[in-house]
Length: 61
Figure (cartoon, rainbow, N blue to C red):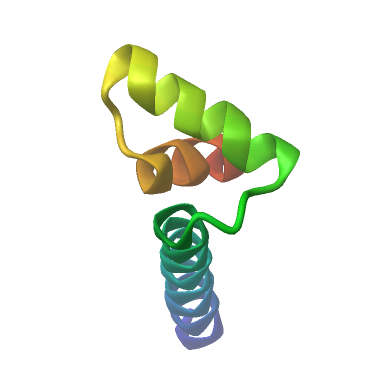
């Protein structure tokens, strides 16, 4: 059970870092990848943040 809690914690930390990195790419104006562009477009249409879209899409896997 302890290994599972470490795995979940490590996974959530990784998702937060991924979301932060994508946000920094968008803010810098350097451009984003295809999936990140989709999440940015969904942010414009629906209002849910890019990081939230990433977490939602990865949690479906």
